[in-house]
Image (cartoon, rainbow, N blue to C red; front, side, top):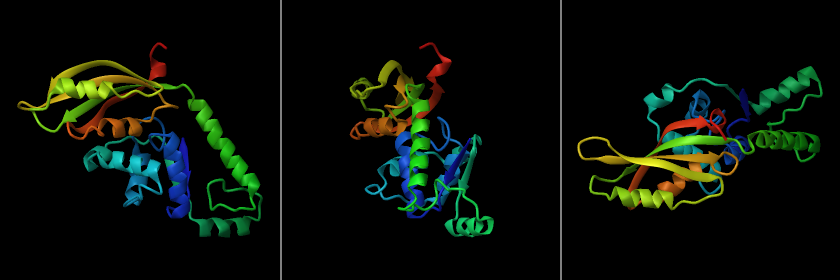
Length: 220
């Protein structure tokens, strides 16, 4: 698997913003070296101009460097350099189309091809399900964990089903809520779920993904 990204200027950020609108991670269904490579090239993201990229960037930033370095390589990320691509096209003088290069208003064929590829990718993901195990951490050991669970379960979205939960000890008197959820990948992104959970900022400090498995490995 691979992901072709334009030079990380305006076009590249627009492309990634669109990609992370429909995908939680760069390649596949969990964080990988591809996410680390892209993250290292982007220092900051304008949340108003690129909301989906911003949400992904914030999520990846929550992982420590040591954790990011432990991620597996599941595919290759290629960063195109427009000037070199143009020179190559002149030398080859062929009809190849760079679907993810600079936009050309006159090149409707390339735009249609790009649109079809994205539609095909979305169609393949349709109704795919994932089983999540989430760790929700409060601000301190005096937080009412039953109230934390109540707030988390109050989150309702099409394609989201909450499962079993437990209150577990972390260290000393600190505790965390561990809760399972089944999501339909097309309808619910992990980043959006995290945004809603951490939105209860008076009680909830953070949310971590303990495990992320494709639901196709389980019975429907």
